[in-house]
Image 1 (cartoon, rainbow, N blue to C red):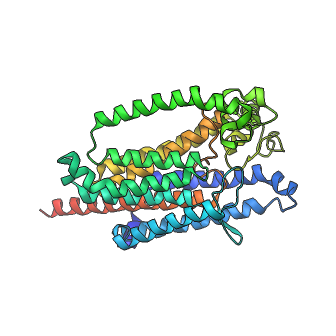
Image 2 (image 1 turned 30 degrees about the horizontal axis):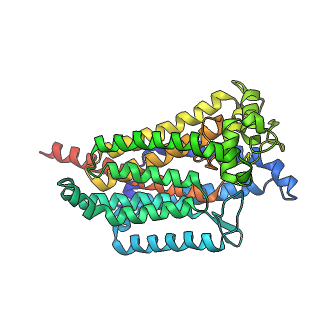
Image 3 (image 1 turned 90 degrees about the vertical axis):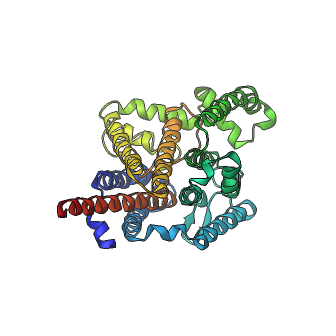
Length: 395
């Protein structure tokens, strides 16, 4: 059955994934070679690691396509993963080493694992199972809904709180978006959901303008890494030599690139002006070197993957499979929105990578796991449709 699913691979998703992964390897090498040399390493070091991540990610996708998707619904598997992530995030709070203002990485020799990334995959399968298992009873009343969702929701919010405490506001926001979308697919009143969205948006705006911005500008909080990012967002050119440096140099990179770019490898901003050019701001470097047209192409490829994922979810007759697709689409969409928002200066910088393009093993492997599940579901649908057609012809 696993081999048959591989034969029915959904190339509408797989080909854009391969193209983006190759572009990612090329851009990581271009953006990181100078950094590696400045740190006394080999200019090929990031390239080799990114290639390894890509190959391992491809292997994960092929494995996920062949696996029995219901294995991930087993209570013992879900409870083990929940315990593992709770332990890992608590361990980071106590023993984590702070890098770039956050203690988000567990160091295992040469490997750095970012639990907040893998939590995204876990929350998708955890809540998809909880919602699918409780239907249709949980749609009968608010009490039925609460009885089914109170513990999944409690542990989901606990994980998000631990991620936010690192602090990793970007990772926490993406995980919260996944939870929010899947909860709203559980029979939760859409009118109530809209009220919550508008209420949260209005509340967040008021807190941002009336509390966080004044706090960030005061001398008492001048050492707060997270608050100083807000200062950079509100007036990047006023802090171009400090917290606004990333945004300002991102603007310069995008401006230098124009429509067609200055040529692969010819970026000026990656030579020490733009921090993290191979991770958070790799799209700035891509735009500078290859132009705005190349950036639009990358966004178009990602849009194809997201829309196809949603389409697969809509077509599925299995609530669990549909919810997985909606969760994965939410994950990729919100992560892209946060990354590009920071690059363009329309959102505060949250340290979020661009899917499939930025350097980072945890992000690439998590995306591969999610995409593998979607391709598994798509292959199942194709096999079922073909079997149905054959049955109709036989009659």
